[in-house]
Image (tube, rainbow, N blue to C red; front, top):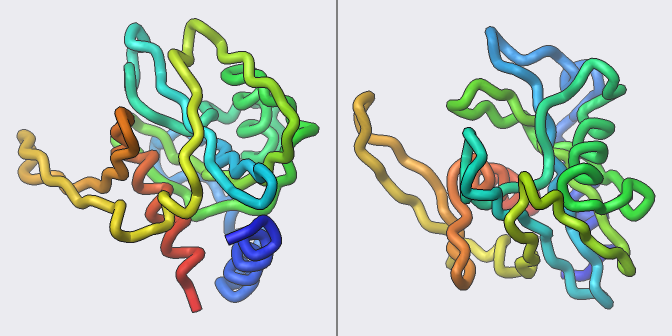
Length: 195
């Protein structure tokens, strides 16, 4: 899938789903705190990939996990898109001028108390990433075709006090993409697979 095919498909499925700004901007349910992440799709000479971060091991939440750049929506942020772009600049040094916002996926509520709006953006090289050493241990890219291939999607089960917990994972090389990040990837996959 090239850039044009991805953008056309993403936008077509958004239109067919009847997304509108009023519905998508509704506040999170209950006490969940609003957050946003950027799913940065990079166009490298027609080959698309997605940028991920690995969080540093000393962070109090999700230490060492694979994630998209993003975080809490602050009072000064004009929208989830604005928050995702701000957090991306802060975490990996990718300037917002390099990102074309394509739209949003459905909100994803996480067990740590956040309601996350995934924002999909197309990134055009050249760019240099400068990770914040306090928050980001590394950045890496995964081919979009790999992420959208259902052969690479795994469903795992983990026992905990509340019973069995099922979660998706997408292993890639030495990286184990799982939890909310893999869940958002599954939502992207389902969106792109819609007829």
